[in-house]
Length: 434
Image (cartoon, rainbow, N blue to C red; front, side):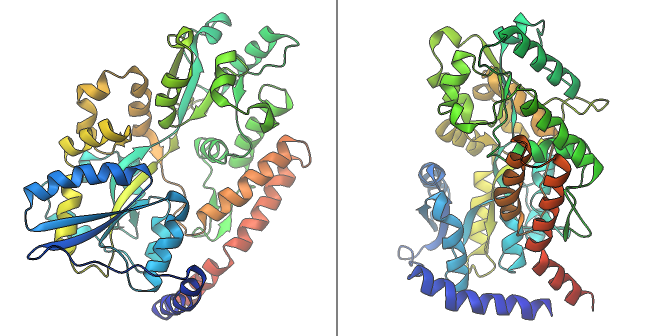
């Protein structure tokens, strides 16, 4: 029955998405006598991939790699269109939260046998939480290419003024230092921490730290009203209610200026901001900020959990050049390739051994990320995940932060909307169980 459902999905996509988009992608044949593999990469990573694949081609003269650059904003639509029209590339960079969607379409190659026979790709080389993002039903569908996660960026000078020589390591300490910073500012319109209500990550991260499962019943219903998630949600909403964090996002039109001016002293964000903070903060502040792993739920081991993010490399099932595509994956996950990719892009390496190169160890701001990456967890592996968090978690977090709903009301409504989004998943599961 599931096979029929997938075929129907594909048929619908063929007739609707192709018409909607108005074009399809055709594979180009390679140079004479060479096997050409088509590699789709997104954003700036595509340009950096072109640099790396030149070296790969030198080492493998019988293979030509054609890298197609696709903007992140158009990536998902183009991939689905290519799937619907049977014009998928051989290999593609795929955000690890997108993998469940393409697994549901039965479009990705199970890489278990390739991993088993590889001398390079071994799960022991990768961060466990990141590796898990690629596994569905005990099958590995992607190999991590680069990783990201969220940590705490903070003003060391401001925390020191309120008695914190070290960053907060527990929820209690995070709240305590925030209260002290706000008290120090008095009536000034300044805050302790920036928790944007238009970003879903902090709410999910703190829920996971509290032990919440986010979804329940085989990921077919929302579980936001669970007491564990509600406790985490109320903890964060308290920061808005007590004016420890700004509610109005228009107050922070420029994150870097706000951080530099002391408008807020702490911010949970990702590795891309290491370079941005270095470049955008004034010289006078360059010795007054640092990164740290996230604080842990009281009683749990430090650091607290964070999300397993990044992009993986997948091989489409329709590829006629899986052997060559796998060779490219092995090349791109070698230590030397990972270090070079970091130099080109500042994207964090997915393999542990690359982190011991001096280009990373000499960067003091990356130490927190390395520590945090050993305690990251995947988000629920459902195709609807992005719709749930981007469309709904943010919406109800803002309602609660502004006092338009109580936390309990917001989470109850969030569960209702999540259940509606997951209705098709429940229907498919019910058919599979018959």
